Length: 65
Image (cartoon, rainbow, N blue to C red; front, side, top):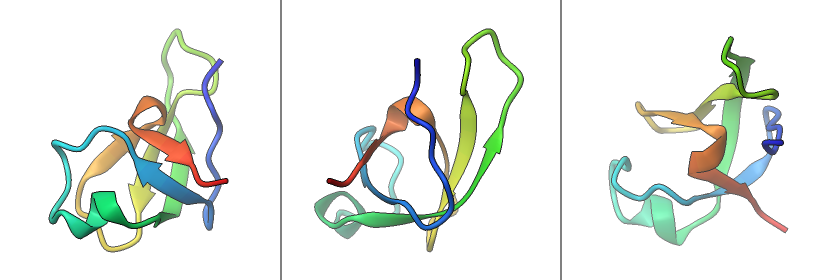
């Protein structure tokens, strides 16, 4: 089962090839919005981060502790 994300969650970017600058992987980011997507994987989401033009998915991010 995938981790569910909500707006305002603090996250680390795990998939580093899709970032605008290196500071995005060095610092905690904030989830702007998260929408469910229809796939065979339960809890699959499309996730947008504050200040990023890229689209992320659950497996691309890890919640900050």
